[in-house]
Length: 394
Image (cartoon, rainbow, N blue to C red; front, side, top):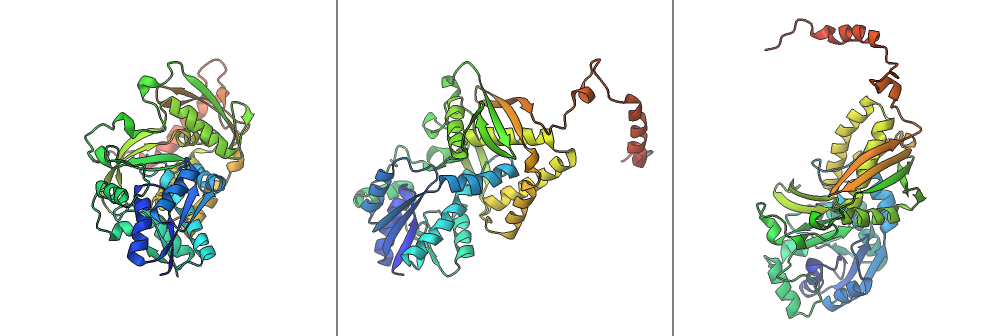
């Protein structure tokens, strides 16, 4: 191989990987960074890549594509892996794979590389994506090949070769961030009995520092898409970033969980996803207001399958595309407003309104406004119970 395009995050692993690839394969290394929220300083990112030996660095602003083509389908799907993880990192990987293949074609490279570990999920997500889009590309995974066994050894390697890195031995966290959330692992977090220290969180405040007075926000939806905040129109990326800021100030969106990785091991993961938490809650509640019971109950089954597809790196597959079509069905009805109260780390729905609402106060009320036909209930009970009459069970 003569030229390698590396998916470059600017973190410790990929910074070391640039130099390692050059030395090991005697190849030119081109770096590609997807700007989907994790790149805080483009200039510093490019300096890091150059210090490691990259011949060229691509930093592509893909926030809008990420929001429209990856976040929105996942939002409509109500996708949460194992009912908890909102899939921020998992959603970003197929987008990275797509553009990794694109830049390899531009650069006429015969190989791509990534900084994913041999025990992680991201190696699957990127490599399956690459092979789906261009099966002729070779793939190199330095972390599966090199001799480093710890992040501390990598830090020593970076210091030896004058590679700019942000990780230190005192703060060895592995961090992956985009606009849909942040994943933090490694270091002291690897002990599942240890409470995460304050410095393990980056987007959200601890409860001791959140405002004492609750904050109410109203999110407007048009045909399933969030389009306004507190009555003002706002584009999707800006809305996500605004809710990350607001939700983070109120400590919303933290999770600490033991996760079943695709490779078969359990891992302890810390996530922060203020905007994702708020928007998924709002969309679920609005859809619950306008859709019927059977649709909602069956959707939960498909939502779990969809989350697995994303988590397992199976984005570019017929099943994921077919599920997208199901979740897109009837989004035209998901129009209205959801009011949410942010208070002490919690996001709670306190108001809902839609022109397509199935809710009827006259049928639900126990006041004098009640128009429910109570006499009809007796016949309904007889028919509903008919198959079970006399069946006492074991």
